[in-house]
Every structure is written in structure tokens, then in C-alpha cells.
View (tube, rainbow, N blue to C red):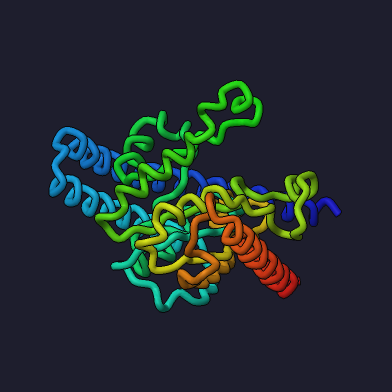
Length: 311
């Protein structure tokens, strides 16, 4: 028994050491890539700040998007070299880098940002994510995200808003300010509609009618549609799944243990379900709620099929 235990123990120890080595290498390479890119974008942001001329701003925005594309391309190279991934990508053939989109996606892990940027970088304009305001304070990263005109969301608690009702529109104002800047360059605005990353604990404790998703929050999507609807070419609905790495996809990705990534892309035209005044038209508001809930039900069923097929 001891002779069998020792080889198994050594094998397990070697595997753990190899996983940790890949983790260190991946984190180091991604950190270096991010540091270089954020410095470049920060410099472009400073130029835009110091020379507030329309032509300079437009040129700086295009250059920043190109640098962001480079970040995504290098990250994809790191990801591909460290993992043997079976990419299952469905849809998105009609997308264009010269159009405007609102993208909404389910949110499972920090890996989602890397995957979305990697998959979409050559299909559509580089994505602008709705970010937590705290990220603005992170050295270089915050300035780089500001330079990319990403909306920063405060997401005040209910208790805070009760004490400070005048701050109720902070997030909407941030979205409006960013959307106004997007008119000059083709843009993709990304909203993780659930508002937070999904895990087993949240699904067990939060009231949700879905097996794999939290309830969609309509506010951010509705406000982005209200401000950008006139220039949008469609709403891109992305479903992400890591069927063989559900527990810790981001860590598994860094350790070289990611085996399969599912990305389904559906493009919805700007029809009566999406083109309307959410905040003043009650009929449209009900119709939009129905459309979004129906979309989430269909997404949840798709995820159930994906996870069931691996068993």
C-alpha cells in the first residue's frame, strides 16, 4: 500500500507544483502586459486631457482602442499558450467594427472580461465595460479605463440613497456622460446585466427564477438604450459558459487547466422591444421587461443544455 501511496503522492505534488508554476508565469505575463498597456493608454489620456481639442480627442480615442486591442491580443496569446482550449463560438458573423452596439452578457468570473475582449476584438469595436467606481483609484488602471471612456458606477446601497436621495442618479449621469463621448467613434458598451458575478452560493441564497443566472437588472441597459438607441446598430446578447471549469474558471485559466469555453452570440435588431423611452413610456417599459426576462429564460435554458451535455 505504501509503495502505491508514494508514487501517487509524488504525482500529486508534481502536479500542484506545475499548476503553481503556470499560475506564476501567467500572472507575471498578464501583469507585464497590463502594466505596459495601461501606461500607454494613460499617456494618451493625458494628451486628451491637456489638449481638449475635438480632433486630438478623436485621434487619442482611436489610438487608445488600438492599444486596448493589443492588450486583448497579447492576453489571448498567453491564454492559448498556457491552456489547450476547445473554443465553441456560435454566431456573430454579422458584426462589424464600424458600427455601434450595446452588449449584455451573463457574468460568471473575472475570466469573462478576458474572454469577451479576446473573442470580440476582431468582430466589433473594442468593448467599454461598466466598472465599479473604486477601480478609478487603482494606479494606472483607473486612468487607463478613464482614457477609454468606460463608465464608472458607484452602485450606492439602499441605505445610502435613503440618507442621500440627491445621489440617486449618479450612475445614470455617469452612463449619460460616457455615451455622449461614444458618438464620434464606433463603440461597444458592455453591461453584465446581473450586476455581479454568479456563483453557487449566490444562486442558493438570492431569490432567482433561474438555475444558472441571477435576475437581470434593467436600469443600466435601459439607460444606455435611452442615450445610445438612436445610434445603435443592435444589441449583442452573449452567453458565456465554462462547462468543465465551473467552480474557478479564472484561476483554472491562469493555471493552464481551462479546457473548454462556450461563447454564444445573438444580435437583436433595434425593434419595438428595444427602441423606446423606458423612463416615460409605461407600455414600452413593460414590453422591455418582458423581452429581457424572456431573453434570460432562454439563456438559462441554453446554459442548462450546455452543462447537461458534459455529464
